[in-house]
Length: 117
Image 1 (tube, rainbow, N blue to C red):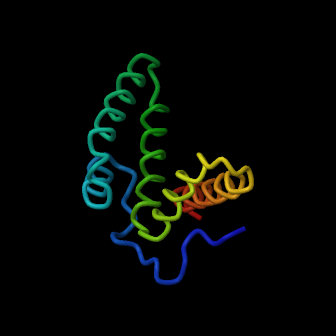
Image 2: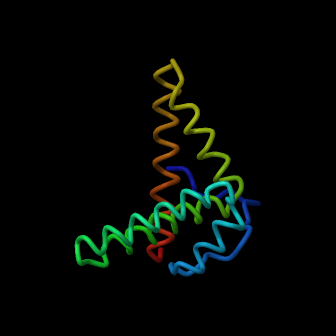
Image 3: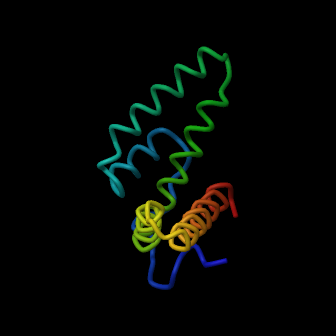
């Protein structure tokens, strides 16, 4: 398995707390182009939480965006993920397989980090 972060892939910002204000600021800093998606997702999470009378959708929202920020705050890791996402469309099956494996490793590592190690 590859390492999720390479030497020299220092984070742009500290890992934010999984709260709405902290995540909003982190998204605005490391991936501002995704703010509209962030606000749409938070609205959907709160509506779903009300419909289901459960905080689970809100917790899932925090976790999902915590993972996005965890990846994006490491520029080299984000670059690797985006390259893998593009390579998934390759006509070459071996390229697609490597890309899927690389993307999965990055995302799983980010989930572990957000979950506390």
